[in-house]
Length: 384
Image (cartoon, rainbow, N blue to C red; front, side, top):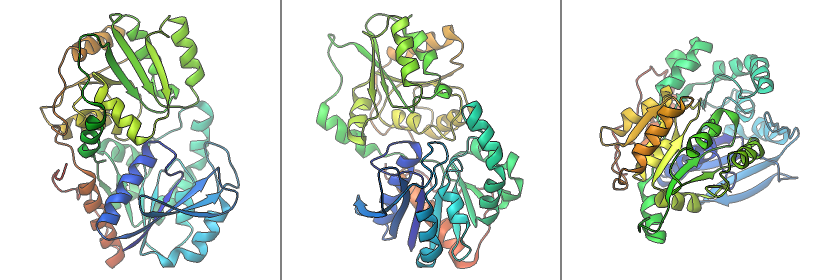
């Protein structure tokens, strides 16, 4: 199959959607598919063609560079001329405009992975989300198949777009234990009584991630506990100022946005992982932490609860309300005393499984426009 992947940003840009698309593309190419990524890029002044992981990436300059809803008219023009060259288009993220570009062509099947949160994460973005709803409905009506990464996301999506129910399937995100084995081989395990206990938090620095709750909890943890925060975003200055006010700068490190290699090394060197996020469509960092063998404290949101179910009974995870400080602190103290598990022990699906399920959906919509029901086409976890 020739597959056109439509995504708002792509490697070397880092984020949950970008990571999802990159890992899916790698596995699809390994299956023999011809994959081309079509993306918007604020660094491009003219359309560019490069290669990442052996995959062609077409980067189109921005016409409207606004961070929340960026638009590239050159991307739209490319699709109007070249869409029939693909067997299927696969667009990603309801909260970005490339999916709308894919919906403007009716000459090729369109699959849509929504990564849907239901709203924006600031008052302005929530308002824009409401304004964008008619465009979102056009995308949903145009799709031959819709993918959600969790049943929690699917329920939320269908509250707003109930007519898409018979075209919507659940294919969870995958994991790749080999990444963490490789990282462990590079850095070795975190051992030795002289080392401080390291708590790791990973994600975009936005208010809805509630990292301020984690900082407040760390202040009441023993002095030998340090917090590493990996990520970047609009909330970075406020969080740094909060760490100063709490007199935590000697115990908290903001390491910024890391590439895959450096981030994997942080996972294998940490003692425990924490996320306090109020909204996720899946919880990819939680899945990665469990795959790396880390004990985890996570907010008790539906998406995280699903990850726990997928990971199986051996996963070391505490689900809490992070706004309740005593509950969060007790959970962190608990996981910081637990040993790591072997890498890959959590029973989470691999990206190879995710690619296999996605390919079945592509083949169905290409062949005769099959309309899929609620049951996920994901096979049992394998090849971790």
